Structures are given as structure tokens and as C-alpha cells.
Amino acid sequence: MTYAQSEDASSIRIALGASLRRRRQEAERSLTELAEAAELSPAYLSEVERGLKDVSMERLLAIARALEVPVADLYLDLARALGSREAMSQQRSWPDDPRMQLRIATANLRPQALRSVAHFSLYLAATQATPPRRRIGFNLDR
Image 1: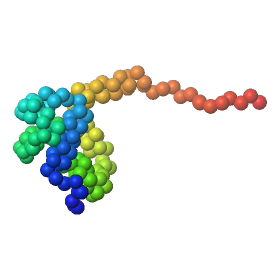
Image 2: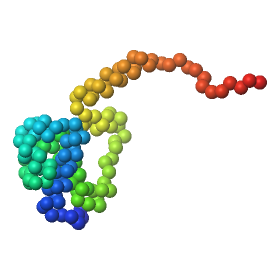
Image 3: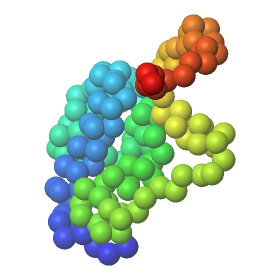
Image 4: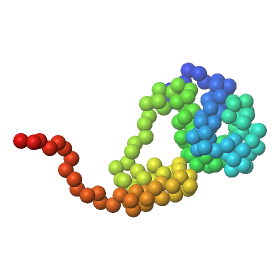
């Protein structure tokens, strides 16, 4: 991987903090909730997100676990934020197996979200049983 143009300690802290904040907000979790799940203080996590504090590997792992995100994804976000061309061009491959696709698609969903999708699917199945076959089109009078 080539070096990014903006590599210095400050820019790395800011980029990592912004990535963590974005991930936390996407997960719809408050700073306090995430800090508690990662066994950190909210003040410390806030400083990390603002790029004011360095974060140790142990604490970064705790944050990643609390976010239910692989640490590799955080590093990939960081590489993209710092301008790495290889990281920007890298795309995840989507497997052909539908079961694996479902596993990947639901990996970051919280249990309540999965339950909501399941309940909605059941509702659709119950209310929209096989629709009657109708011809759709125009009638021409001759």
C-alpha cells in the first residue's frame, strides 16, 4: 500500500475519530451507550472522536467490538480518509451464495431491527397471499 499524502499523527487521530463517530452514528448509538459497551468513559471516547486523544490497540478493539465492526474495516476507513488510492479502489466482493449474502447484510443490524424485518415479512406474507391473476392492459373496442 502506498503512503497517503497527509500522514502525520494529528491527521491520523482526526481521521480515525471521524470514522469512529460516523460508525457510531450509523449504528444509532449515543456516545454514552458506546462508551459503556466498550468499558470506556464517555469523556475519553469524545476526545478520541474529536481527534484529541490517541487510542491504544486494546481500546480500539473494545470500541470495534462495541460497534460490532471488524477492526479491519476501521483501518480501511482510515486508509480511505487519508487518501490511499488502493483503499479507495478496494471494493468488497459479494459472494454468490444467498445465505452468505444474507449473513453479511444482517451482520451489522441490531436484534430489534432484525425482529422488525421479520415481523414485517410475516405481515406481508399474511396480507398479500397470492394475488388474483388479472390482465393488465388496454381493451380495444372493434
